[in-house]
Length: 616
Image (cartoon, rainbow, N blue to C red; front, side, top):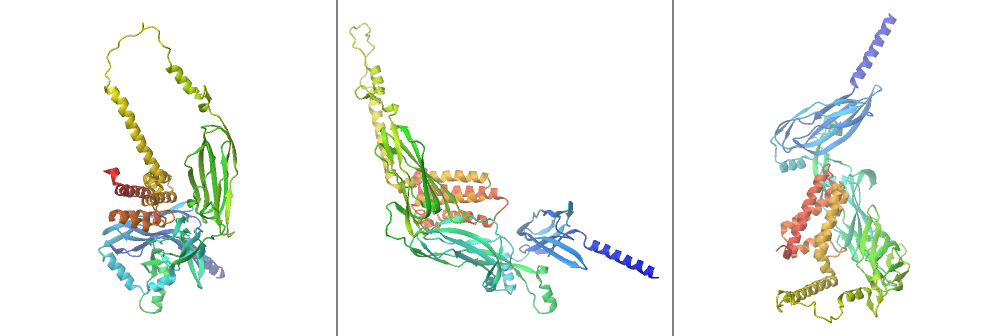
C-alpha cells in the first residue's frame, strides 16, 4: 500500500514538472490593444517573447506596417516572475501607431531568433473606421485626463544651465539644455522654438543624436535626465545679456484613471495593463542671464584685437636661402582654447624689397566641450632685391581670464639670404642680357648697294592696319585702367569685396557639404550647409560674425523688400538643419539630399533678389 502511494506521488511530481515545462516553454505572440480603431486614433501593437531565459534572444524583425504611421517604437520592456521556484521571463517590443486610411488591414508576422531557432508571431487584423477629427480627438483626450499641465510641468521640464553667470567679453560660457522627466515619452520630440543668442557669437557643441537618459536627483525628487543641446557662447556686448528659452513639444504618456475608487478600478490602473493615453506638452526652459564684464583697459598691447582665451603660437619658414623672385612660405599656427573663428590675421611687417600676397587661413575647431583648435595662416613672400634680409617677429596678443592679464606671443626672427636671380642679372652698361639679345636681333648693318631693293607696291597710309594699331592699344589701355580701378575699389572696400565674393564662398562650402553627404556624415553635412548659408548672409548683408543672428538677417532682408515666401523658406531651412539631430532617420541620405536642394534654391533666389543686375 505504501509503495503504491509512493508511486502515485512520483507520478504527480512528474506530471507537475511536465506542466511547468509546458507552461514556461518559449512562445512569441502578437497583440493589439484594440482591433477596431478610428482613422485619427492611436493604438498599440505588442510582440512578446516568453520563456525561462532571455539571454538567447536576438534579431527581432518587425513586420511591414504599410498602412500605418509609426509614432513610437520599438519600445522594449522586460519582466520576470517566479512561481513555485520556476522562473519565467518575457520581453515585449511595442509600437504606438496611427492608421493612414480606412479599411480592414492585416499586420503580418514578426520574427525573432532564440538560441538559433526562429519564432514567428501570429498576424493581426485591424479594422479602421471613420473617427472624429484629429483636433477634436486631442481635445477629448485632454478633457478626459485628470492630469493638468501644471502637474505635467512638475514632472517634465527643461533646464538651461550655464557653467558661469559672469564672464569677460569674448570669454566662453557653455550652456547645457537638459530634459528632466518622470513620465513616459510616447514618440519623437519636436522643437517648437530655438533660443536666441543676441549679443553672443555661438558655436554648437557636438552631442549624440540619440538622447541617453541617466538618473539625477533634483529638488528632492529622482528624474530621468537627458542632454538635449549644448552651445558655447562668446559675448560680444557688455552688460547683462539674456538667452531666450528653448521650447520643445513632447508627446507624454499619461495613465488614464477610471472613475470611482474601488479596489477593482485601482487594480486596473496598474501600468502593467498599458492603460495610457498620449498628450502633447510644450516644455519650455528658463531664461538665462549672463553678466558680461569689460576687459581691463590698463597695459593693453598694441597688437591686441579682442581675442580671449589661452593660446600658444609657432611658426615655420620653408627656406632661408632664396633667389630674387623666388617665393617663400611662412606658416603661422595659433593653437588654444577660445573663439578660434574670430582670431584676426596678425600683421607681418616685412623690410623693403619684399612683396607680400594675401595670406590664406584655415581653421581646425574641436567642438566637443570647451571650444579649442588651431588657426593656420600661410604668408606668401617674394623677395625682389638681393642681399641679407631679416623677417621680424610676428606678434599676437590675447587676454587670459585665468591669469587676469594680457599675454603677447612672438615668433622668432628669420635671417634670409637673397641671391641674385637669373632674371635680374645686369651687364652692358645697365642693360640686361635679355635686352642685349633683342638688340642683336633688331640692329642691321647699313646697306651700301641697292641690288636687293625692289618695289613691292603702294601702301595705303590710313588703311585697316593703321587704325588697328591705333585703336586696339587704346581700347586695351581703357580696359586695363577700368579693371585696375575696380580691383583698387574692392581692395579698399572690404564690405564690397565680401559682397562680391559671397556667392563664390557659398558655392565652395556647398561642394564640401556634398562630399559629406556622399560620406553619409549627417552632423558634418548639416553644420557645413548651415555655415554656407550664414556666411553668405553675413557677407551680403554686411553683418559681422560676432553680431550675426538669423533674426537680424531676416530683418535686413525684409528692409530690402525680399519676398515673404522666400524668407519663410529661409527660416524653414535653417530650422530643419538645427532640428535634424532631434529626429534622426534611417533614411538620412534622402533627407540630406532634399535639404541640399532646398538650401541651394534659397541661396539662388536670394542672389537673384540681392544682385538683380547679374540676372537681367
